[in-house]
Length: 180
Image 1 (spheres, rainbow, N blue to C red):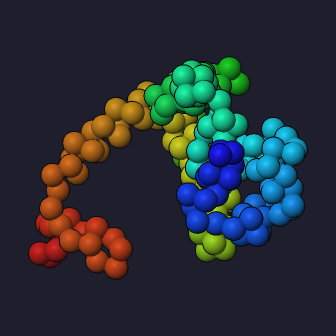
Image 2: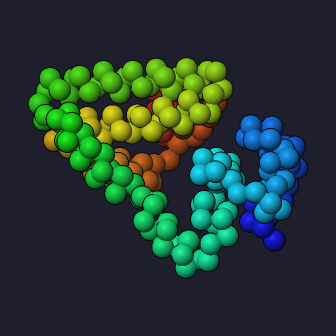
């Protein structure tokens, strides 16, 4: 079975639903599934994002090749962290001192405002973009402050991993704050 059709069937979706959700014409999706027409690169990417599967999988590439492509094209957090730092250094953005740290903190705050707007407007694309931008600005801020964001995250997890408490209105409240 064509992987596009298979992905759609697994999700229990109709051609019409996929068309409405993605903005791709229903008859085009049908032609892609019947292999009467080849999607453009942007369409492959849009559909792989929509179905939450790698492009190589949707294209029906052999699993060994899919794994190889994933190793080349999908970056883990540590690798992305490294590339973002290099990107910022190449643009002379990282200058470890208090003043640039304050400037970068302002950028983090700006991105938080955009995230808030995206959530309030129920704009999933804006939320996704804002979360990514926040991570980028935090990585750069940590570098400005001579910290490693991964170390910070690891430290925070060690503090919370055994924390007890209660979720109230969707927010976790640690046990010590419940008794106040």
